[in-house]
Picture 1: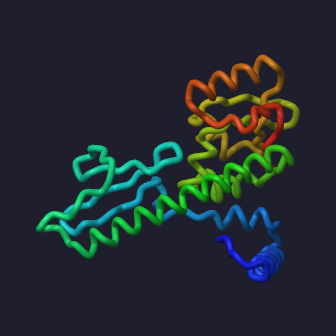
Picture 2: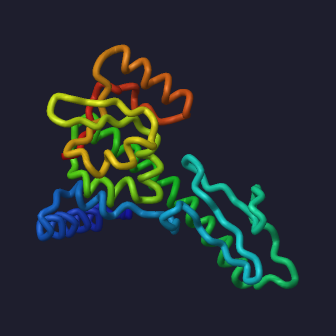
Length: 212
């Protein structure tokens, strides 16, 4: 949440610091646990109820895509029919507008946080990373578009695709790092990012984003 006045911002920071200290968290740990979800469920879906009809807004990349009850894409929510609930339709349109606004702000903020964490070589406990980021409908979508490396000690394995890393190894590995060891791996990673339209934050793939 962003506050407009300086006094309110300072008080919010102070309270955040107090809460983090009480839980033995850093302020960044608290921020991880406070990421807005834009009203999306764990699948990245926002249900839009018209009464007898139900539409869905699904997170695709960084945008919400609308689907009708038959699974066809829509450019916008339709006007309610005579058998629809007008009040619910109005609420659905308001919910969609609010979700899109919050999603845009959340994506921008979390992209910046990931970039800062990458540059600072921030580390997480694997369980926190999974519960706060990977399993979050918005942050998880961003994480799945990054190149991650699973490593233990001096041994590392570059995983460009999301499936292996986000499966068993994410639960078993004691350390997880975002890293590409060497120019050839960097080129491969960048090619993979371009092919999958993934994020390459600032082209700094040599930097490290780690979980402990």
